[in-house]
Amino acid sequence: MVKKITMIEAQKKHAGRYNIYLDGQFEFGVSESVLINFRLAKGMEVDKQLQADITKSDSVAKAYSKALDYISHQLRAESEVVDKLKSLEIDEQTMAQVMARLHEQNLISDQNYAESFVRTMAITSDKGPTVIRQKLKAKKIDDNLIENALAEFDNNTMLENASKAAEKAAKHYHRVPEKMRMQKIRVALMTKGFSTDLINQVLNDLVLETDAEDEWYNLTVQAEKIWQRNRKYDDRTRIMKTKQSLFGKGYQMDDVNRWLDEKN
Image 1 (cartoon, one colour):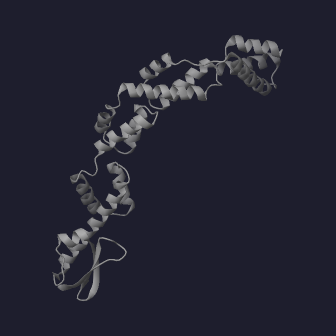
Image 2 (cartoon, one colour; image 1 turned 30 degrees about the vertical axis):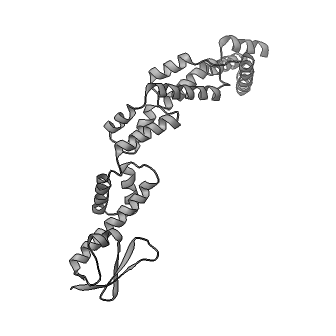
Image 3 (cartoon, helix red, strand yellow; image 1 turned 90 degrees about the horizontal axis):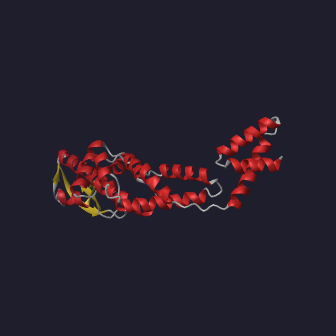
């Protein structure tokens, strides 16, 4: 059955969308791009097949508009756009057309996303390549694209970031004995994704500020807690277990023995 367009009016609540009336009755809404592409005009005849084509094209246009809105706020990985469209219950065929259009217009690119992500992380964070690589993998970025992007993370910036992270960790663990503090700083840098070679370089250059009085005070506090915790044991076992605990925390043998001598 063929119907005729009797009126086209702009929607009041949705800019860029139009209501189409066939034979005096509202039939469907379309975006401005669909209106133009199908050259819809008053008096035009519309059969069922044409109406189905128009409706399908409008579904793509609406999904495309939502995708544009999503990527307009910040750079997005392709997988993020796909996940967003899925959350909007966009069907696979429509989604494929939307993604193809975004690609054609260079509006999404995992290579650009990866490069931008690496630059931003290098400037604003203290994370190393391993962590950055993991974050990009979580966005389903291709391995080759990740490695290409990481190649832009220059060694000087990486060294500077690792050094800052080491200094921050050193302050955080300032109450920990020097030997154990270095170990904790190493673990912190590994957790942030820096390589072993770079960590060794940073730690070799790192100068820890150690206050003998503060370290002795911290030892006495820790030792007293451990000593009380071990009070159920006989003296010999109590001393042995206390020593083991303090050595495990990085305190020096001479300092531990000194505390025990003063305690007893």
